[in-house]
Length: 183
Image (tube, rainbow, N blue to C red):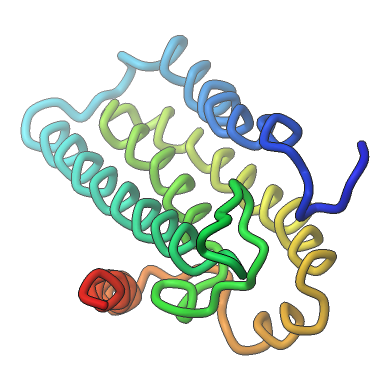
């Protein structure tokens, strides 16, 4: 493999980007293809599910976007030499409330897409995407963070939850990015 995690080229971690569409396809695809038109609530119920899915999709992209920009701006020891992978543990903004906001955003995308189908079977199947996200965080991201940041990360996990749905966390993340924009 060659090199430390910090030196890892982008293409070596490309599989992480492929993981999400594959996870969504594997969990939501079969349910939608085979059961997509079965037992839809119809009428107002279907509309409510689709609107809830759309709102959740917006929320998921908002969380994911705030987290990505926070990593971009604060995740590098030398801001003039920003690499693709962060080389500094970020504990500000949205990361002061939760350790894995980007993964929370991706997990919410799967639930949102399922709600937008309005199919109960697909909504239930989205639970597998949640399980897949938890697996990814527990067995891939967390061990990598321990290897990369050591004792600092150990202290961080004692203080900060992996995920939270508290809207104040998103507000805190947006506020921190806005302050950065003014300085």
